[in-house]
Length: 302
Image (cartoon, rainbow, N blue to C red):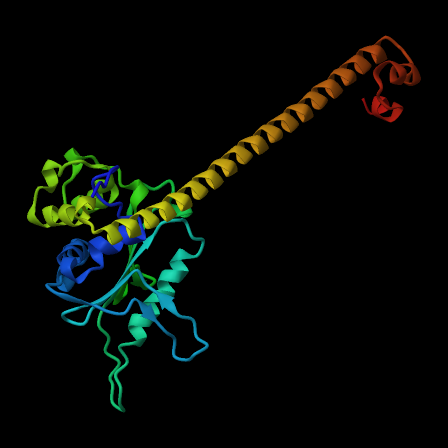
């Protein structure tokens, strides 16, 4: 099989993301990745993949389709979403998605004390939130807090990873989280395993990501997924470029208009100065108006 081009799969494609983190045979990768993000008290040793579709309580309710949905051994719920393109209401969507693993915990029967297991919604974003564009922070951990900025409820956690902001080099990788984010961001560009990632878990990840190991059907599925990703990326990049160019054109138009207005102000002031000098020479307002183009009222006001 002649699989050319890149050596490793692109995790930002639907196929690549689910190949790495959504298959039972490789769930050790997802466990390790999640543990790199989770607090110590919710570290997991095992998990079970669940349906990636959730329905509302009635036929008319909205449904949700997750990239990856799973349950930890202690009942913790995890939703892992890969968001390739900017979405205006992605935060709203992730909060909406979080309601499903909360509701499904409702115990059947008459007696239930409403105790819930922790729910984590993790968004791996191939874009930057507009309101955070100037910030260098690429990881955002969100929980419910009170007016004193104290955590009010710690069983619902939203974690957003703005991948374009993660620009660390191999030499700058310090934590296990750093290594995972570096892997996700760069694996499709690499030819060999970098020294900082020469650990068993990442060796497994690189082996799973190696395109040469795919079957023909897997390769075809990946190529289709990659084409879709590139088309979306090209469309987004083109839209951004168009918006930037339009913004520059508008800026130039505004600049030209401001210069034109400034020129008119300067010209008007020059006329007034001439009118003042002619007034000192004793010319009548009528003659000065003819010479300068100012109205007699403007000349009288001088």
